[in-house]
Each structure stands twice: as structure tokens, then as C-alpha cells.
Length: 275
Image 1 (tube, rainbow, N blue to C red):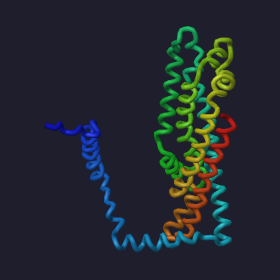
Image 2: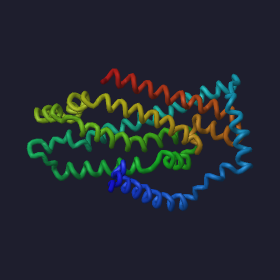
Image 3: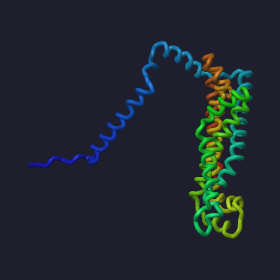
Image 4: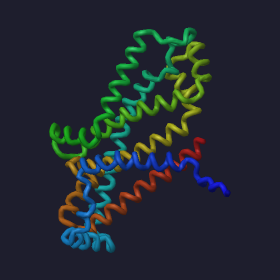
């Protein structure tokens, strides 16, 4: 009597069970989120969407509109760059404080003094607070405090990205080889010198790549914050979308894609130079 052939995938039962469990978990979340994709196929929605998307085929290219687009694009870049620069002013000192590899008190014993641990933990919690609040929420808060305009966007990016950059910078440096920085600290070097000449050269490529990526995110964030009155390209896009001016929105989206592509190419060039 011939024995039955073995199943080609011996783990098929586990895969099927895992898929079933995922579906059981996913379904309640979709119900709670009121996910109703069939609304997109409603005739009224399809008609309005069709008229709006038809304008995308011919982006707006009038002289006056292009001049306004160039001005708002430059404003968006300025908001993102200024916000990131302010974030770096807070993130770099925070990195020096929370980075365990640059601790002088741990030399010899391998343990930090209690006061050093308390200070590091306090700064870590401050960074957690800053990055836990999305930049859009910070922008809404600053719009209420100081009014509409780019200043709200700059401050919102500065606060949120300070928390992000400080955390990731410290993790990148702590994952690199600590021999050079340990040697400098053991021979009386200061923390800043140990960072610049010990830890930074090895991690420079990764740090720069992440910084450029965050600038790219800041550009995207500044566009989104424009929808709540923080100025820039997003505010103009919000006005065009409310008027269902698809041609204008299409031109703005093309500029936005170009900005992200340029940031990506810039990051590649820097990584090639540093790596």
C-alpha cells in the first residue's frame, strides 16, 4: 500500500493558523475604525473625484501662479531648514548628555555616578515628551498662541525633531565602536572632543544620512502644517483643494515630489563622500 505524499510545506498548518489569527485581530480594528472603502464607489463621489482628477492631466502653468508657487516652495524649504537647524541646537547637547559612551564617571568602574544617571534619565524623558507630540499638534498650539504664519511651523518642527534627533543620534553613537572615545576620555579629553575626534568620524555617514532624511521629513511636515495655518506650500494647497482646483494641486504635488527626490539624491551624494 502506497504511503501518502508529504505536504510540500511542512509548516503550512502554522502559517494558516497565523493568518487566521491576524484576520481575527484585524477585523475588529477595521470595525472600530469604521473602514468603509465602498464609499469611494458611490456615484456622487465618483463624479466629483472624476472632475477633480481630470484637471491633474494639465497642471497649472500660468505665469502668476508659477511665481506664487516658487515663492511658497522657497518658504516651505525655509520653514523646514530653520526648524531643523533649531532642532539641532537642542539635539546635539542632549546627545552629549544622554550618550553613555561619553560618560566620564563610568571610566574604570564601568558604572555611572547616581547624579549622572539622574541627569541622563531626565534629559531622555524630555526628549520623549518632545517627540511624542506630533509636529502638527505643536503647530496647532503655536497658531493659537502666536497666530497664523511660518513661525508656528518652524517652532513645531524644532520641538518635535529635537526629540527625534537627540534619541537617534545617541543610539547611532552608542552602537559604534567606543575604543577611540574611551581612549580620549581616559587620557583627559573633554566630552565634546571625544565626540568630535572619537565617536563622530566612524558614525558620520550614518548621522548625516539620518539628518538629511529628517530634513526631507521636515519638508513634508511643513507642507502638512500649512493646512492648519502654518504657512508655506501646504496652506496654498489647502486653498486650492477647497476650491477643487485640480490643476493647481497637481503642480504643487509635482514640486513636492521634486523636493523629496532632490533630498534623496543629496543624501546619496553625502553618503558616498563620507563613506
